[in-house]
Every structure is written in structure tokens, then in C-alpha cells.
Image (tube, rainbow, N blue to C red; front, side, top):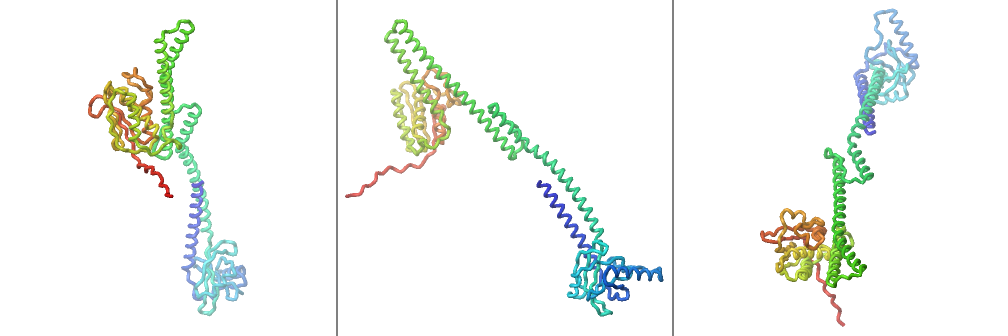
Amino acid sequence: MAVTIGIALCSVACWFIVQGKLYDLQRVQLDDILPPPTVQQALTCAGDPKASLQASKAATAAIEARDPAFSAGPGRGADSEFLSADGSQVCLLIGSARAIVVVPGDYDVLDQPVNQGHFRQGSYIDGTPAMIRVIHYYDRHAHTSSVMLLATPLTEVDRSLQQLALLLVGVAAIGIAIAGVTGRIIARAALKPVDDLTDAVEHIARTEEVGTTIPVHGNDEIARLSGSFNSMSTALAKSRDLQTRLIADAGHELRTPLTSLRTTVDLLIRSDETGRPLPPDTRSKLLGNMKAQMQELTLLIGDLLQLSRPDSPRPGQNVATVAFHEIAQRAVDRGKLRGPGLVFNVELDPWFVRADAATLERAVMNLLDNAVKYSPPGGAIDVALHQGRLTVRDHGPGIPSEEVQYVFDRFWRSPSSRQLPGSGLGLSIVAQTIQDSGGQVALGPAEDGGPGALAVVRLPGAPEPPPNVPPVLPRD
């Protein structure tokens, strides 16, 4: 539609421009014709243009009968006609072949200076269109004023304009047809990625097979949309894979304590059914084992619930400005209870952060639990907080370089530590909590090259909250 309107407007404008130029040429031709000084001896006059034309033809025929060599017509390239000032007579030059239709406004030119006038479009008495110049004419010999009409036919001009109109209509129709076909082809090619994207979305909605991608070509908006869809589809596939793996790993981790619990319960029930009670030491050991397995299940379920939180804090969570050094100190105090034979070297500088105090303390506690678990008896654990950088260093066996990349994966446990208690989710919770708080965490070999592992947590600082000053009560 836009191309059609554009071509139509251009064609119409072109036609009017050409018409104006051709009419201007006709006016220039008429303007170049100078009125003769006198024509009284060569005029035939009558009361109207038709009668004057008949009289002119009769006079011309009489003259040609006497002088065959007589050349009729004014020979000026235009037809002329004279109107008396009082409007009673219309005069034509002898030999004129056409008479001009007179309109009342032609006499208004008598109010203008001599040889001045205007142009108008009119016609001959036979209906032929003409360009007419109306002039205030003054005969120097007769000392009379009259109206002089000079006219040239517009037949050729109108024919040329008609041919131009047909040509423009044909060219416009061809142009519109070509533009329509080309636009359809280009639109189909340009929207092909959108069709592919729609097919991919419908395929995912129908089959729930996330991860489907479409080819991306170019760098325009559609290519960006396709790339964004591919990124979203890949992220969904990765999320589903992580979810599937989490469920599988959780099922695997839950199966071990449940199997142990079922075995222990079956043994206790069988001893009661058979009437052969177990020795007190054995029964006490089995009950202790059950308690340990239940504690492991409780820990595992708590870790799973912790990991089920969204990755971004939600409105309503207890996110506030908290003292990171105080949280670390509380975690160290709890860690000392879990490792009574260990030495804790603590250096904590004041540092305030925006975080959930409970989850942040649990993250620090998980790092300390990891250090306590791998520390040798009587070993030392170094805890330091300087400028938002918390380090936890143990002096245990350390982490092999090939296992560093897996330490924060869910349910991952080093082959050398599978016999130790734990669910394999503690460090995953640490990573998620620190990321939710806008920080970074890393775990690897000690920086000095010595034995043990070093955990590093970096959290951005926050302005220290104002102290809670009690209100001053007025005196009596």
C-alpha cells in the first residue's frame, strides 16, 4: 500500500508538472506576438464570432476569385479576434479560419494599460480547447481601443497529456505489480526466521523438548530475537538437566540412609518376632546407628530445602545490613564445639554487608564444618576477615588440583572423603548464598603452597547502620 500510494502520488505530480510546463510554453508563444499597429483595412465585423467568421470566409473567397495568389490568414502562428469596446461587434482578420468564444470577463482588460492583459483557457466556437491571451489593443490610426484575443489550440498539448497519463498509468501499474511481488518475496524471506522461531516454540509446547534451537543469520532484530530464543531454550534445557540431576542425586543420597534404617528396623523387628532379643550392647549400637542415619536424613533434607530457594532474594526475606564480623565470630564459636581438639586462629575486622544473616551464618558454618572435617587431630584452622575478604584455612590433606572445579557441585564428594559424614550439599549452599548476596567464593589449595585448603569469600561492603541510641526521657 505504501509503494502504491507513493507511485500514484509521484505519477499525479509528474502529470501536473508537465501540464504546467506545456501551458507555460503556450503562454510564452502568445506573449512573443506583438499587436499590429493597425488592422482596420483587413477586418470583417459582425455581431457575434460565428457571423464574423462567415463574413471573413466570404471575403476571403471573393478576394481569391480576383487574385488566386492571395495568401489567407494573419501568418502569426496564432488566431486573432478583435472586440469593440462597446461589445457590439466581433471582428476577424480576412482569411481567419477559426473564431474564439468570447466571455464577459474579456472586456475587463480595457481597464488595464495598452498592450497589457492576461491569459485564460477557453475554446474556439467549434469546441476546440485553446490558450487565449486577452490584450487591451489600441489602433494608432483609428485612435480606438478594443479587446484583442490571441489564441493557439491546445489539441496537441491535450493529446500529449493524455498519452502521458496513459504512460504513467501503465508504468505505475507495472511498478506497483513489481513492488508487490518483490515485497512479498522479501517479506517472506525476512520473516522466515520468525516462522522457524514459531515452529520451534510450537514444537517445544507440543513435545516439551527444551533445548531446541534455530539457525541465526545476520545481526538484525530478527537475528537478535532468534539468538535470544536460542539462549532461553539452552538455559531451559540446562535448568531441566540440573533439576533432573538434582532429583537423581537426591534420590541416590536418600537411598543409603533409608536402606540402612530399613535394615536396622527389620533386624529389630525380626529379633522381637523370633523371641530372641538382641544383646543390650548390640541393640544400643543399632539404635545409635538409627539416630545417626536420621540425623543424616534431617541434614540432607534441610540442605535440599536450602537449595530449593530461588537464586535471587525475594521481597519479604530478611535481607538487611548485617555485621559480617559478628556472623563469622558466631560461626567460629559453633565450629569450636564441633572440633574441640582444634586450634582456631581468628582475626576479624569490622565489615558490614547486605545479606540474610541466618543464611550467611550457615554458609560460613559450612565452610568451618568442611575445615573441621578435614583437619588432623590437634590441627589449626585460620579464620581472617579483612576488607570484606573472609578466609578459612585448614591444614588437612588439601584438595587435588583436578578436583577443584567440582567442589561447589551439588552432591559431589571427593573419592577420598566418601567415608566421612556429609551430604555433598554444604559447599553448594555456600556458593548459592554468597552469590545471592552479590559476592564471590573460591576454594582451592593454600596460597603459601603448604598443606590444607583455603576458602575465600568476598562480599561487597555496606554503610554501617547507625547505633541504636535509647531515647532521652524528659525530666520531671
